[in-house]
Image 1 (cartoon, rainbow, N blue to C red):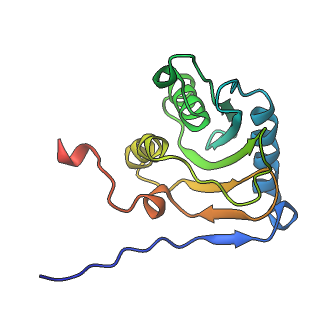
Image 2: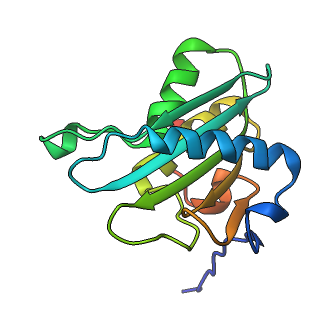
Length: 160
């Protein structure tokens, strides 16, 4: 038997103002999307903005439903829309921000497992990494150079 260690490496910015201009612009769009989230049950709003290689930006936010499993996260709302509207475009970068109406979120909040798997599908499909920036409402911002960094043991089409 052999033990294998798997690590993720993130760049962490102390605050929004430290972000590169292109990432800050995308994060502002994610923040605007977060404000339109439909989250009456969890009171936890998430916004996503995706930059495509054709310079289009697609945004999304979480959409809840009284039948909880029927809702959809912001990341999947945006990525599926991007795939439907621009099927040949590659995803260059994503910006994600999450906030609670119950307490202030000040630590970086990464995509949930289901969203990581959905993003992985597109990263594998395009055979190119997707940069992902994520934050709470304020505070530090984390950057991953790829989804594979956040989900190193990805399940993809090669297993089917």
